[in-house]
Length: 98
Image (cartoon, rainbow, N blue to C red; front, side, top):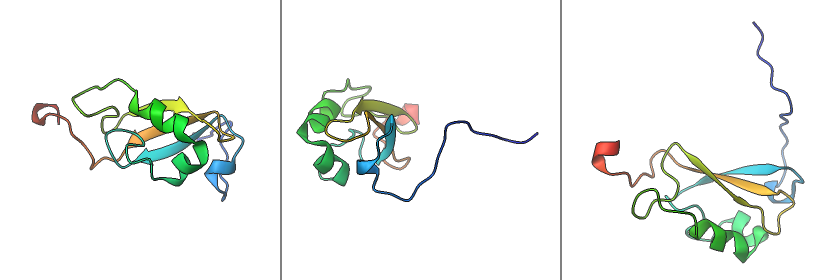
């Protein structure tokens, strides 16, 4: 059975300039945008960093558990949303949750 995906496109481009529903950003910390130093935050403006930091904590200090994703607004980006996902090796989950 062939596999098909509808509505998915690949492009080599600056994702901060794409006029799309959402962009996907891998977060290197359990709080998306906690450093605020990424190009996405620079282009999106300070509102996205504030929104990212206001997400509810799932565990103490963790707003985006490893393997899960959270959405924020796109701020000043053309994209309307940013989907954040924590890197798999950046986990602050309690030991019994791993």
